[in-house]
Length: 481
Image (cartoon, rainbow, N blue to C red; front, side, top):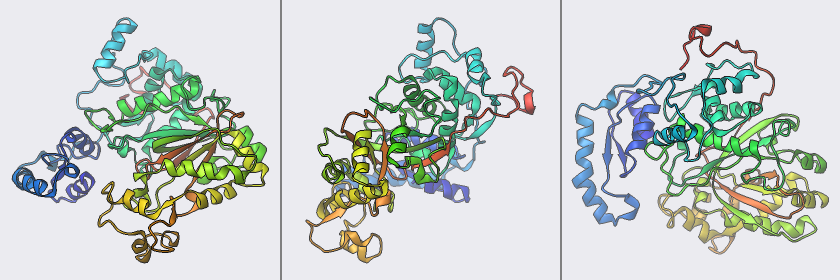
């Protein structure tokens, strides 16, 4: 609704956005980030999905319709676009916002909402300068604009949050690649605070991962490896401090996930078995350093997989993909179309088991697609009566007849027939990481276009930017900020 209102307002057509209680802050932040301040809003009395139809209609007429009329006929501040990147009284880049010991600085940062609750490394000007010194990057170079907040994405802002998170300078290329993804409209960072609480996972491929300090072995998704852990924390801090994903602005997660550490693929294992890394799905080669990101809802551990051949292990792995998949199927049809791309993370042992059976990665995908199936009635319930996210409660056979779904979903009208969780094998993503001596895997459900799979090159070469002192406010003709 907000996106439609923004389009209408941009075209000069007055509009009012309908929202449920509790989303006023998110609506204001979204409008501000898209260049329209003070969106005209009309609140429902309660969440529409939790009300009987009669009550919803009567309360809508009594309480919401008058707000719609007032918003369309009155003098609304939403008619005045706000300047892009307007700070709104925020501190400038070089302002000193806190002094004192670590405890005092932590108190100020916590009260201002600049931290995730954990202590941070104080981002002094000197500390940020040291972080950037070796790279040669211009601190004031703009990398894009935060769609959700209107703030500038600068190298300086990346470095400030990196220092706070405890990152090392050698991690900067990965952070800049992540920033490029966040700035990419195809990724859709503005959806990062939706109510399902999906969170981004960064996946790193390439020969430079080890040189930058990232590990891919035992406990690869647990806190502990400094580079993996601090990069994951940097992302959450950057979303909070630059993109505005806090509870009073954009983050409306009902529950949310803990911060996800960066996942580095086991490039050695992939080379041994002749499989391409995950980044190959986005056009990159095994020699390229690449960061890939997507948002995920749920995770299922597939533990102690038994079998000495690919044929023996594939059914259990496919079952994990089915078990982790629920309302996410609305990204197959409903909220999106053919946009569900779940991730299966295989331990190197399991990947070697498949390769030893002569399976390529393509073979593994095909077999998983054929095995990862659920009853048609359950698919229909998940996208319809159980979630309410597909209008009309359609049957799969009707969607196939209308040309909306592939033929695999309409081979009969038996409600017990098994149908795939994705329309085609290519939608199943596979990564290889973790303890090389254990037969375990992880299945993760993808949030479709609400953080679409996006990849960016990680450039580890020294920058040729004109480097200057951050205290020189006339450097390169640009003031810092």
